Length: 114
Length: 114
Image (cartoon, rainbow over all chains, first blue to last red; front, top):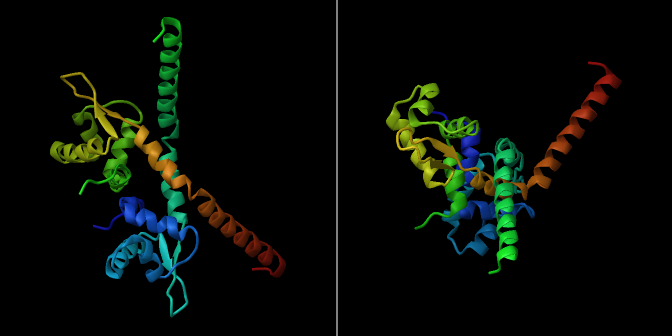
């Protein structure tokens, strides 16, 4: 069964190393060796993560034949953000209810003492 | 190895049925039977998806002992959105470049004809 694009994106984001790789690439392109440095991982392990990110369209390869620098393709992140934003009203509402509760507790504390 | 919370959230979102369940629950609580109806899936199949969503903290169970309605817990969606929004500048920049390109092509077309 073909996996839909949004599922591929969210699946690729479901790993802390892959999210860290994206965070690094957001600052600029980097070769596999450069990407491996801060992670204390072997090159094959990093390459495996990069393959998942490439398959999801989140990372692409630059043209430089020597370095083969990887680049962030941010468009898919935008699509995922847009999907989640449909629920913004709901989670912001939750936070607001929590804020109201904390405010009410503070007022009560002032009134009745600790 | 313990899976971190954000990875659990993104992993739970990496499936179209689970995203559809969340979309349904955003409109209000629903029992497993009610959730299964539009999906043409067996109850055990839906229950399996619900377990993934519950484990990720995206869905909780109501107190009604008979219906055990499921509810959306939107807070974790907010956390995932916040992670993605750090890259907003990047993907909006990409869209803007695309817009500029399309605009340039249109202008060129007008100038030179089809």
